[in-house]
Amino acid sequence: MPRSIWKGPFVDGYLLKKAEAIRAAGRNDVIKTWSRRSTVLPQFVGLTFGVYNGHKFIPVLVTEDMIGHKLGEFSPTRMYYGHTSDKKARRD
Amino acid sequence: MATSQQDRVCIGAIAGVRGLKGEVRIKSFTADPDDVAAYGPVSTDNGNKSYRINVTAHAKGLVIARLDGIADRTAAEALKGTKLYVPKDVLPAPEDGEYYHADLVGLTAKTEDGEHLGTVKAIHNFGAGDIIEIDAGDDDMMIPFTANTIPVVDIENDRIVVKPLPVVEASGEADEG
Image 1 (tube, chains in turn orange, green):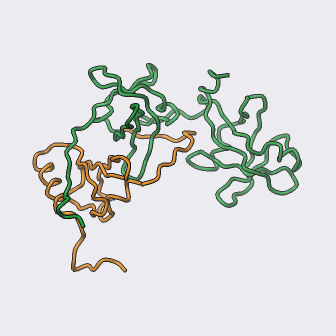
Image 2 (cartoon, helix red, strand yellow; image 1 turned 90 degrees about the horizontal axis):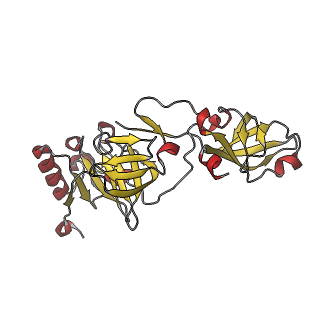
Image 3 (cartoon, chains in turn cyan, purple; image 1 turned 135 degrees about the vertical axis):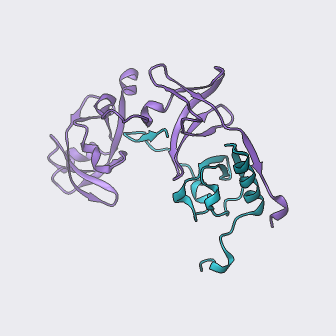
């Protein structure tokens, strides 16, 4: 069953506080967090979170497309090392 | 053969056969599965044999293809498990700011002060941009692949310069449970 709309998106209070403080200071620190359950809010766009996957902290650079998803969706708990083949990475 | 192995990339592997006419089932490792046939003839592990691939169909996530010179099931079965390689230089040149994973893996990572961090182990993308994994001995480092954090990528000199971001912790143990 989906979450009731009247409740609004869930985000851990301490994470929101920390993100707003970092944003207000204009820093681009990685915010290390265990809160995989927190929803990505519009005010998180541009920030980098280190989201724990049970093993290490995966950097998650938040973009607009990610709003409404949970942080844990971008930090998989199982790692697959495939072949490099013709895959490309883009440095923005 | 060690040098030539470094100059090649594995683009697929023969997973099995289909039918009696020598068609093979290829597990493609390329970004677009059909591109397994896009880079010209492929060579086998030891480089002794070379085949041109003609993709005929797709089934269960695999590419069904015919290989030049393979006309019956017995010959196709003999190739089961064979990895298929192409030379790195047949891959099209990447655009500005783009890098092949194959070129990045194995580069030495150093800080701006020249301190050795480790070697690039893998490149990931979990939906939040590309991430470089650096094998730093006991603990692997995950660094976002951006111009801020990786200001220099020098493939010719086998190195990248890493500028790790400062880390702050957000924990709320009082909120848990």
